[in-house]
Length: 279
Image (cartoon, rainbow, N blue to C red; front, side, top):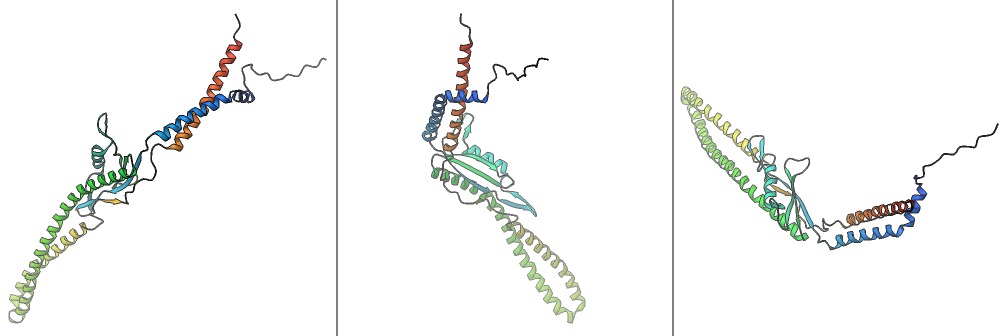
């Protein structure tokens, strides 16, 4: 019997090995280098010519006031506050119209909090960013301080009235107590009648003391507090834009990818022309 020739796996003619791919890239390395250099050059020009932008950020804790015991409410609804700040100081002051820097780029509730507002201002210089943010925060604090002080004045006035009324009742209570001591020996019956009049006075004094305690608790820091800045506003040391390292990295990546695609594209065109039958 004749031995059959050993069969070898066949490959399609258009199948390209990794070695062939490498040879294509190596043969057109200058094209890849030029694409890389052009993209990096354009990216560097953008990164170093574009005017820098600086951002300053801070956290503002919105104050609260206790109108009812154990039910403190914010001096201003935090969602309404964010809308008001963005409308007054945000980038877009009207549809399609951008305001020049500085402006507020972010006014949002801090994640995980219901009373803390994060504010970010953008400007052409670090000093402008910090100063503008300070002005916005001061404006919010002034508005809230007016509301806070109005509620504070009402409660303090009520406390003063309670104190005056309690002092008058306490004086009357002490006088009746003294009269009872005098009547005990001379007229016990009349002393008992006067003692009955003293009971309502004691109840009223206790009620006033309870109200005074409740109002005092409402003025405590757990119930009522002003709007405060959490941390100092400082001028940024580095620009937020442009991010030079990121721009150069993206430009380099695009340059390499573009060069490789051009190399394969030109190789495909060259092979297509070579395989085209001559007329």
